[in-house]
Length: 488
Image 1 (cartoon, rainbow, N blue to C red):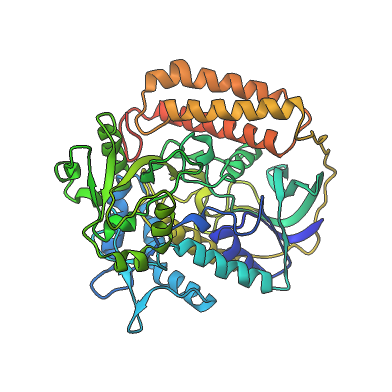
Image 2 (cartoon, rainbow, N blue to C red):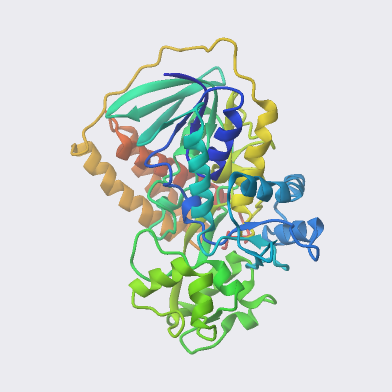
């Protein structure tokens, strides 16, 4: 197969890029499952932007830097914030109907923000954005969509990318492209507790680093403080906007423990709230309490959360909600510039797979969808399909059956990786244990996976998880002090 632009991933950045690129040439968009299966679809809160007269660019920048522990790339932060308003209005132009009152956008507040600056759609903002973008992509005649298509590896030669090798319709094939775009999302599935969907197996980071890209800030993994404390996979997220609308964090004694821990109390940056909940859980359960709010308000403001909790026999209008931290977002990733360019020619990346520098050591709530949108908006200036596409001769590995011994081994190793990462690279880390136990154990798992042949999606995903896990552990070992969401 041949195309001008190969987009790998169907979250907000991949879909947004595809719509831009389709104006310049033919786009092939591949996704592991269905188009809607992405972390974007799970995003409840909203998108942060300077949208109100009482707010300003400098304040949004300040909040972003404070949350990121000043480890951020300040130029990247300013670039994102200054383009935030246009990003919101692009979505509105595409058809996203954010909550409004009397014609004005309603704005909510989340942890780390000193102003109400988050545009939202109920408690299903990401789902609505995904729905609209998917609709627009399907309408476009210049975009070809391949669902249930897994990217196995990038096709590279002499530091130039020529496309990707894929598994599609139970066979291994090659797609050659003028430009290849990684929009593969996060890494949550390498942890035993995560809010991320099953697709988040760190494929993009693994493929890019194997091709020669640089990964940076991999130790900075944000654990969302308030996932529902029920044994479900993935963990159900209780949006930070619930706290933004007045929910209180209380411990088993009924104490509002965050009062003594941070000036912003329950709306402190996520890393701090997650760490404090983690400490409190040693002594008993932790709850969100929003029972002082009217039932009518809760059902209207949080329809999805309200219904989901009801299915677990929790009435948020009268019951406390048990919560626990879970792996949620990677602040680091593949190093890119403002146009998404990597160190490999013709290979670009956008969204959570990247390290643009805007998040620093800890992401400010609702800056993630903004980052994905702002940076994938810029690429249109750099798109130049080649006059003649170069096609290389690439060996294709054999495909292993899903019931093979190799596949069963990979499934077993996946469980080991998840448990190992939660233990050694969880909310609180110990550098000595990472060096003495964590890295050697994961290296042994990785060695086993390197010896597995032939391959399939499960085997490849497990390999990607192990490779990315090693990047995280090695980065955590080097970081000698607590910074952002890296606690030692």
